[in-house]
Image (cartoon, rainbow, N blue to C red; front, side, top):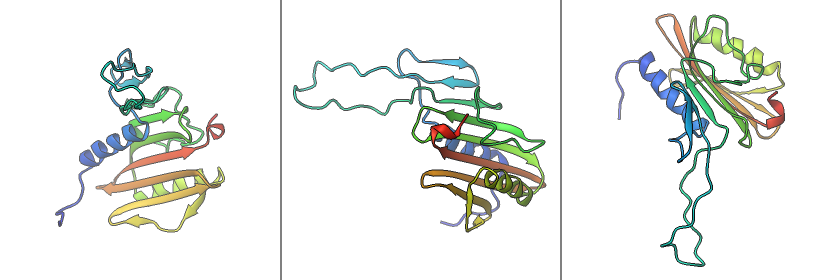
Length: 183
């Protein structure tokens, strides 16, 4: 299949929001879960109840459940967002954010938009992550998307993906780090 034209920032922002929500393992709240505000979701889980129709001796099927402590926000930073891990580039407009400190590894995601070039955004975040001990992995693009991957130790990873259209850079950052790395 061949795609025509360049990706639109709105479409990328919608895609990035979906990625941010998926990264934070947010899904519709389980019974008893609630949203903390219209733009912030706080998800809680309840233990599955045994089913009367479940044959004895058979494990109950466990539906995919939201992760306790996972939060996401649209248009703002979610409460507790680890800005020391993922700093905000000056002039950014936050499109969405998510944070799950209880997963292993902990995960955080940010979607932002800033006036400037993809290379300037990549340079800012390359310095920010290398200053924290992450090593850049070779490779700088996938098609027309500027992308940088970083690794620290064996399991801590960060990905920065950036598109640039008409002097505006839209970027998505996803980080998976050990819980002790987020303060």
